[in-house]
Image (spheres, helix red, strand yellow):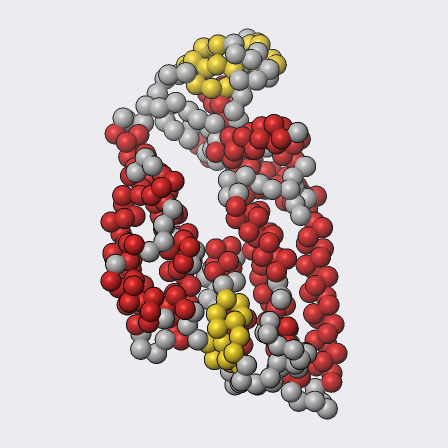
Length: 195
Length: 194
């Protein structure tokens, strides 16, 4: 039957709507090969229709299959693109290496460009009224206090605050930090807020 | 095929469901579409089940190459069950994409009974859906819901949470971002496997 492989691909990515899977280049190559075969068969049969009119119907079936494959592949790439966008907002502009290797080279290039675009947009915000940009990924909720108490979940290393103080973030250590400085780390899962 | 959800994976999976069809023309070399066929060619007049996307696109050719029949869950026998008491039916087992597929095949039903059945079914099951979204025993109550009903129930639960959070004046801890947290969980599961 037609377009079975590409359905497998989509089912896999549908099963994990909240995480990104490794890019399946081997499977995509197989699907493209299937499309190439269909195309060549169609071309031969289309040329032969002058003698045998009934071949037209077959050509139409294969043509539908080609269009279907194309639609599924585009949908796969698009759903990944949406996930990569989320990566930028949740992991930040630098991806951890284990996330980085889930993307294909082209996808990573797209990510870098999206990241640059977003950064230059955020820098441009409010320039006409004298501000030097605003980080939209911060303050997703209105902050209730200027400082917050956090506990560290991993050995992160040194964190330099804007006033020049250096805090050593070790696993299970507790800190009382300015909310503006540690929000991003909470979103990235390095710190956990204590209430 | 409507273009508005060209890139929607759910819509693609819905159109992968099989529908029974009758072919009007000979299809040379397409014998494999009918599992019971012995020849390489598919003869005119064959009845077989093919995926909806293929059926739709061949039906829309001029002249149409085939006629589409209703899948059995939208036929009289099942329609009677659904109209009698839709809540007793396990829609997940019957057809994961009951409503979506119904919307597609409704246009091949000239009398318009399928449309009414779909609306009735949803009306009757709405209370069940509400219960499922508020229930703690999520596995038990989610079981008989169809794919889209499960999504509705989950969305209802999320909204419920958001409202109770808002009523506490948004005074809740900042959380790790969704995708980051899920990536961690997944990694941990993989580490434990080896």
